[in-house]
Image (cartoon, rainbow, N blue to C red):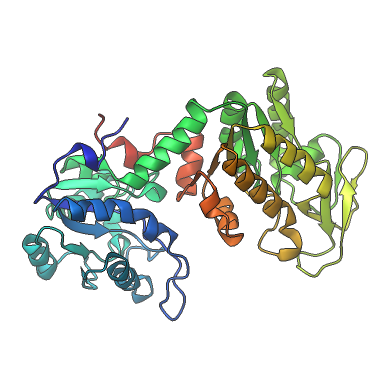
Length: 405
């Protein structure tokens, strides 16, 4: 268990907080989804209440180590000021730290907040060699007394601002990081049973380790999305022009055999909605997915069918813990969002009934947000890649550097 800001004295200390403010911003400079900023608020508000002097930092997008106004955190600073009801000092400094930034950091009063410019404007941030990151990490650390990592979405990256600064400052987690580790950790290591894992997404190869981990940990696995067609093909089912991971065919068969040997239920779609084009208004039909049947040659599966929705929903109703990573179909198109929406709604109802429901970030988080159901889940992870690596059982550098209790 990692120390949090609760476990240290922050009063009158300068605290450097790594947040995940990697939010979508439109061409007019408007933030279109502030979920990640909202997620950081409990930590920031706690530090203000405790009389800390607060320096926030984050990356935004992929500026490739160069200052680019398109990736400036200026809109984030404005949004933070509104949310906090107080000014957040910000200056767009291409080098991130200059004399003005140092002077402001040194003159912060308790409860004052400043935000640094995009940490990725410096090439050292993402340098592969930690020695190359070190001067920048040391420069960031020189501004503060304590480092707080609250950026779970970037915790799988060993960057100067996520891990390197901990070489020079005592490091603890923020409340968002604490919450992520609690819900994902308990789902994997101490779930209330039955534990149902729902997996979607495109390629089997992308989630091999996650599937292997969940075969070990979960009681039932429900497989949907693009990856389901590789599993179905390996069983002899026709899948037409559906997404197929050729290299994953043998692996898919092995994973199903592994689940069978472990006595775990591994459920694939029994029907699918398929169309002849990857378009919302393409004519579609439902096809039974039991060998030797399946999807005819020129059509592609874009969603799970009604029978599968019913089967998966029944499993969700039985569960005490549910972990969902990956949509059931092309939820971005209304015509093929039915399966993903049905799973999200079933999980929301399960949450209301006392089931622990955890959304593993990425497209699954985007889907529940699209359907307006985020608030009806026990936890929606802010990390896509970080969630996957955590579920694979890999150590996360941004977590490893934080002190243990």
